[in-house]
View 1 (cartoon, rainbow, N blue to C red):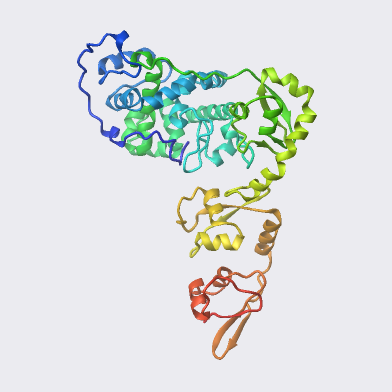
View 2 (cartoon, rainbow, N blue to C red):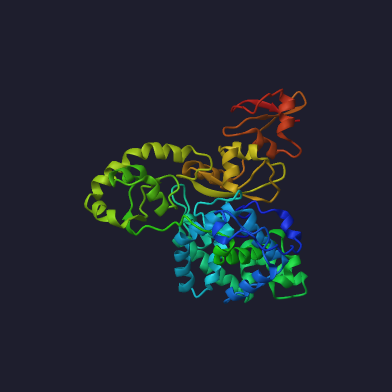
Length: 458
């Protein structure tokens, strides 16, 4: 998705300037005598070009040195990664194919998820993009993917795939070109439009290539390359795969707390089987909520669950207090909290914002995908507060400002601390006053102050 760093495959950046490769010498070892992981040192450029022309369906498959470089990467350099996605494809491609057909989209788009996430439904990028299709939080919400501490539907293969189809269809409607639609999925439609303008209003991916962000210049060529390798896996000696297949399942609606480990025990299942069927459940537990959740079970155990439903769900409540404690206290948790948006002002730092709203700096970083301490004036920060704290904050913001209490003492300006004041609040009330200046004038070593305390402010 746009405005995020894609799921990383450790692709070597030197591929950006890759040159044509020499043609290999014929192999002298008989094919049947080749070891399992044998592969030709070099691939024939013209042969790959011919094979790719046979694959082309709806979306153009342009073959050039850039694509050739990524073919060599997937076929030769990172064979473990390629073997992994070949094995996973049998599990996820049927899901993709169903929704692509439902929405009238080209079947070739299914390979895009490999570039997005490596076919990992629980993939999380370092900026917070999640799932097979790497939705950012706000884009996920726009496409009706529910997210809370317990459930993140960006990790649901079915719902996220349908959302991705709807989004890609919308992007194609903007550009009337599938390569540009895929590029926009990566970098955002605004960046693609900008590249189109800078190119002199050219309308094809390779015509605006040099004007796109660096990451996006690799994105479409990687898609073409992995599509080739997946279709000609045997020719590159990807044999004896460990294919993954989805077990037959059925759904039951659950609206009560349930610890998956306990449910699995009562059904004589491995907990991993339930997690694999329900990757959107983030912490191995379903919440106590009015919103029923479609919980997937192996088809052969559903009759037993239906018969013993009440006793199983009653037993599954045993872990509730432990899970809820974790939900309240884990870094970045939004459990039981409401969101407010704060606009960063001049002089703000994460520490003072955290102190003012009584949250942790680590929470602020997690909620806003901030890696360090840098924030900028005008930036919007998501802050999640418990309802009581949120009401107090909003009430204080809407209240009429009270006169600032100042006492003149021996020619000095003195401020008397009011209930709820912090050094940050006081520094904001007077022009030119900073937290550091208050500390220096009053010989304060820390940030603790109390109501009634008198502070020199000038």
